[in-house]
Image (cartoon, rainbow, N blue to C red; front, side):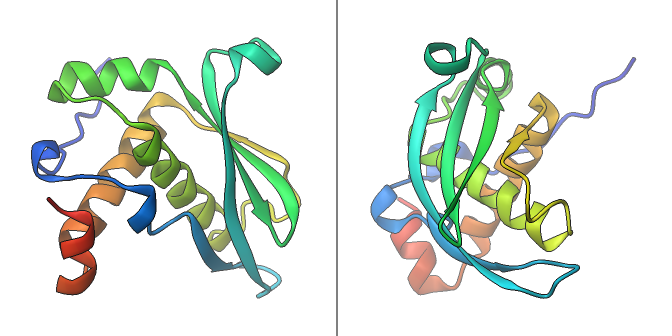
Length: 146
């Protein structure tokens, strides 16, 4: 069984800050209803303390309704192995926000309360977040890149 290796942007050149987070407060259009929903990051909770899961849960409000995105802890280990870098809390929030926006726009359940990602999904969305930061317009990129 071959695992797909994700190529990451140079993590050492990226700095993530909640002050400049792109996916902490965003809008998405549901694929099926065409409804424009407002998503706001609210909390990060280590899931072992609340639901005995090996994950970190991000809570977003989607038009005021709580929605959780669970990122499995093994993704932190895999990213560390591949890059020598750590997934920080602000980066984890960006990954969860990116996934949530993608899921809503793909029509994967406007009414869902919980999304649980696989390690592979976390790494794929991490790659997308870092690429978007690198490719952001210069003004935005200056805020995100060190």
